[in-house]
Length: 85
Image (cartoon, rainbow, N blue to C red; front, side, top):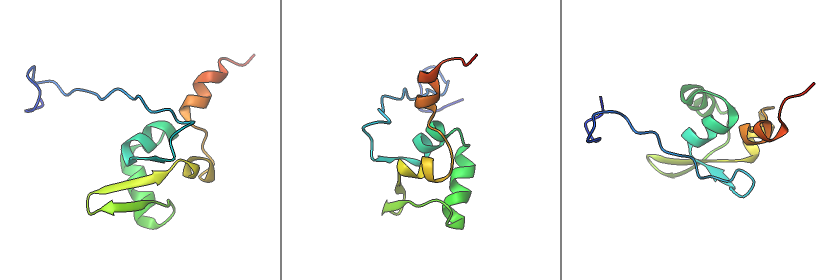
């Protein structure tokens, strides 16, 4: 139950991010596009395996190029390819 929602249900933010135009992503958006969990992204940042920019104490941004550097393929690209036979 979410105390900020009138219905009591958590609302999911719709992604309107164009991965081809974005240079930096929030940790949550990075997790979504790289098919990693948010906690895994946090652990990678803490261990130093994921590069990020701290804008303020609670605001970080991760370069989109980190998806390829980690050896992952963005979900947006996977969805465009369609089924392989």
